[in-house]
Image: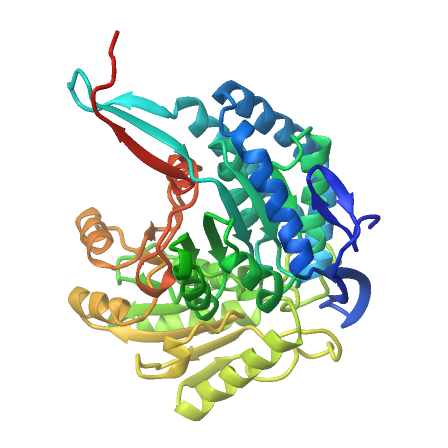
Amino acid sequence: MENARNFYINGQWVAPLAGTDFPVIDPSTEETYAHISLGGQADTDAAVAAAKAAFPKWRLSTKAERLDLLESILDVYLKRSAEMGATISREMGAPIDMSKVQQSGTGDFHIKAFIEALKDFEFEHGYKDSQSDWIIHEPIGVSALITPWNWPMNQITLKVIPAIATGGTCVLKPSEQSPLSGILWSEIMHEAGTPAGIYNMVNGDGPGVGSQLSVHKDVDMVSFTGSTRAGRLITKAAAEDVKRVSLELGGKGANIIFADAPENAVQAGVARCMNNTGQSCNAPTRMLVERSRYAEAVEQAAAAANAITVAPANEEGKHIGPVVNELQFNKIQDLIQVGIDEGAKLVAGGTGRPEGLNRGYYVRPTIFADCNNDMRVMREEIFGPVLCMMPFDTMEEAIEITNDTDYGLTNYVQSSDPEKLRHMARSVRTGMVDMNGKGRSAGTPFGGMKQSGNGREGGAWGLHEFLEVKAVGGWPME
């Protein structure tokens, strides 16, 4: 990739001022296939300065001008969508077919939704029936956008698009573990005609560029997606000058399967958990099953996991690929062993690589049964293809188990009883609830409660994240 070692600042590709080389490793082979630069303070300062200088003019742009830019970005993105899918597949291990459809597809999915939300968004309006009160929604300023490796385009578009659609400017720091998709995204932004300084991109790691952005005096907001641990550090760093911090963090979602759930609920739950090799913050990694159906569910889950093929990311067809890197591989292996040591019943998978794969960060699809909520595997985010199961007897017990977690991102409920579904949706403490396999529509808010974060992304809610609210009294109505 031509610009692999460069940064995108003030509308140009520039060489690092204080960069150091960093290898990009193919998780399917453990081989280095590219190098990027990790930026230093001088690079961070240059990107923030460009965003700050561009803000006064861009904040006065019209909604029509910003819509034109988003439409242009969408057009270029769609032209390069297959390239984006291939790039993500190699850098973080998503199977190529899945990556071209799901990984790359999340990008245009969100861009389209933001275009529709922006069309209907009122940046200025009166307050109730008052003849003199006026509400103005204005851009917050310069935003630092720090994105993860597991769904690169999902998170980049959920942050960059609303930041610029509201009249703000931004600096993106993609994950150094999946950086080439961020570079390709920057090429798309340039080709789309993004005005200089509106969007900037500097590669770096969390302790470097990430920390520098979090404390930078000219950054007005930090939007971060990643681990809860890193979210805490960013919040503390940003508190020094009271920046706004929007966080989308980890999860430990429960999939609550009642006896009257659809016949394929267990198999669908396993597939949903294992998708993207389990590397999704909203994966349903705890499966709670009503006791009358539990024994059958354990058998079904084990069979479903054993039927999953694990293969290199570049192979076509339906399978799961490797996890992203050696650090994640070792963490997952350690936690699988913890589950065994804690007495959870291993009914599928286990430690070690799948048979026939002796190189690459491949993990066996693993199912634990007979778990309890005191086990680490039920409480910690494993972030791999590992599902933990336990039975429940009553709906209130299911609610208690579900809510007994530090996290609160997404829960899942399976039942044929509408009243039961409604009661569960209101009772579980998560920012999102999916029922009977039905996902949420484009533009609905994405985000969590408790230690899963404090912001919302997507649609009009995502636009509000990057806006300040100004109340005016005595507004002349004529």
